[in-house]
Each structure stands twice: as structure tokens, then as C-alpha cells.
Figure 1 (cartoon, helix red, strand yellow):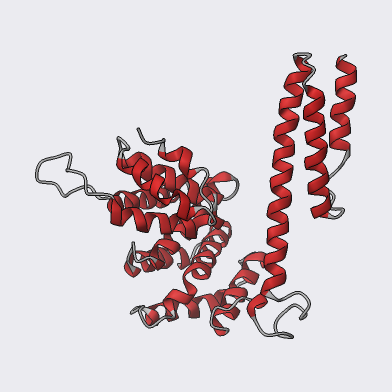
Figure 2 (spheres, helix red, strand yellow; figure 1 turned 180 degrees about the horizontal axis):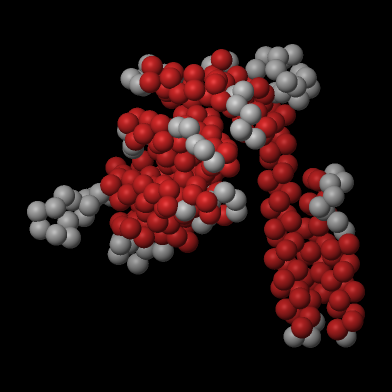
Length: 312
């Protein structure tokens, strides 16, 4: 029996995709319902937008490997992974359209922006057509009387163009001229006083990216852009990201050990001392990487030590 699809999906990263790819295929094939597989991927994509390229790649691979399912009703079309996925993205977008005033902040806003970015990544894999994306941009970039809705609509358009920028400028895209019209609309909106300053900055950044062939500032030559040559190299950028990931991993282990230690203390189990030693090791590793960052406070460990003595 294949391992549940969602449990394997929760372990997926860019680094281990090659290792887990076969397990994901087997689990998806043996899954009782295709909709459950699509829902699991879509939920991960909209809540973890930085991993949208990874989940879009997974969808492209699953689309090639999963066989079509027989239709529920006689005479209907076969049920394919691609069709179910597009329905999930469309349903998420239409749900936002019904709850526009509730999506202005909080989790719903994050899910809406994540869904927009996921749609952009699917376009790059040609799992959806330019027509669908153009319809979305046309609806979002239209004039709105409510300035709050205009802010989130233009922010979503900026997220989308940041995702698909290089694709729409490539020779394989046959709708470049249509996209040009929407960029001219963004130029007009960049001076619109109804937009929040933060959103206007996003618009200006997208326009500057396009003028520089969609190359981010840190990929430019030395001395170019907003930052000095000491800070705009890709190598330094990747080093900072790797350090932050390693630090967050150690802090996550620390939180897990603290929870176990608390449970042992409440049960008056002598094993809590071993947990405390492991917590201090994780704390030491995270502190060395953080190099004095505020959220790595040694007081977290000693607070649990004080709690232990109070309990005894």
C-alpha cells in the first residue's frame, strides 16, 4: 500500500524532489480520489507561495504520468489531472470574487495572492493558456471605485507579472503585444494617488524589471542598481538565504525538544535533563549562525530550567 500522498508532499523540497518524485507518483496513482491529490497540492501551493515553482513542476510531471479516470456520467469527458487542477484554481479565484471585502487582509489575502502566483507558474509549464491569464489580468487591472480593492488587485497583478515576466517576453509567447497594453496601464497606475505607496513601489519595480529584461537587481553587474557592489551579488544573496534556512531549522528543532521536555517535566520523568542538553546544543548551533540576532535568545532555554526547578 502506497504511503498517503499528503504525508509525502509535506516533506517535499527543491533538494529532495528527485528522491520523492517516484513515491509521489505511486501514491497519487493508488489514491482513491484524484480530487484529494489536487486539493493537497493546491493547498500547499497557495499557503507556501515561495514553493509554487516546485509544485507547478510536480503538477506537470503528474499530468504526464496519471492516467485519465472514467467519467462519472455517461457520455461525459474523461477526468484528467489537468482538468481537476484547473477547476481547483478557478474555484479558488471565484471564491475570492464572492468574498472580495473579506480578502483584504489575513489568511484569505495570502491564499488569494498564492493562487495567483501558482497560476503564473502553471502558465510557464503551459498547463494553462495565455487566454486564462489575460482574462484574470483584465479583470484585476480594471478601474475600481474602492481604493482598497484596487490595491490588492494591482498587488496581485504585480505578483503575476513577477512570476511570468520572462515567459511573456520569450519568442514562444504569441500574446506579447496584448501584454504590452497591460504594462501601459501599469505605467498610468504608477502615478495614481489612489494606490497605496507600497503598491505604487511594486508597480515601479515591475516596470524597472521589464526594462532590464527581468533580471533582478542582485543579478546585475557590479555598481548597478539600488545596492552597492558589496550586496548585490547572487553568491552573497544565496549565502544569506542558506544561513537563514539552517538557523530556522535549528530553531524548529529547539521548539520540538522544548515541547518534549515540558511533557517530561509535567510527568516528573528524569529524561527531561537529556532534553535540556539537546535544547542547549540546538540553541548553540542556531546562535552561531544568527550571530547575535534578536530572536535567538538564550533566555528561552534557561526559562525552562527555572520551570523545572519550580515543578520539583
